[in-house]
Image 1 (cartoon, rainbow, N blue to C red):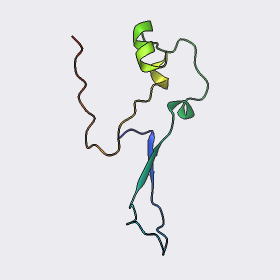
Image 2 (image 1 turned 90 degrees about the horizontal axis):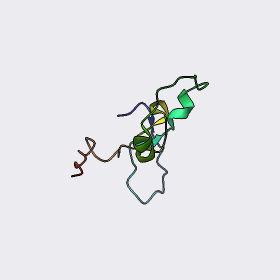
Image 3 (image 1 turned 30 degrees about the vertical axis):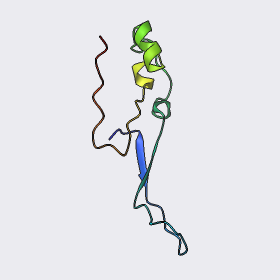
Image 4 (image 1 turned 45 degrees about the horizontal axis):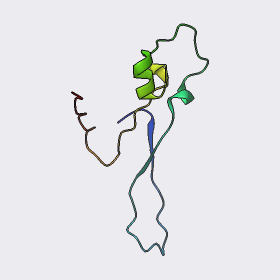
Length: 78
């Protein structure tokens, strides 16, 4: 799991009709862990930056589903 994914344990209510979830997760954005953006930070190539949604790898946070045991292998585009 990513260090950007946090977990918490909800407290089930007495009258909750659904079975309680033992653990819930949420993701935090990478910019929370980057203080001041340093000059000369590594950058993606422009085409890659458009795909990733950011110019800087330090600010890229891929979403990984908490319901899948491993990230899916991406298909190679021919």
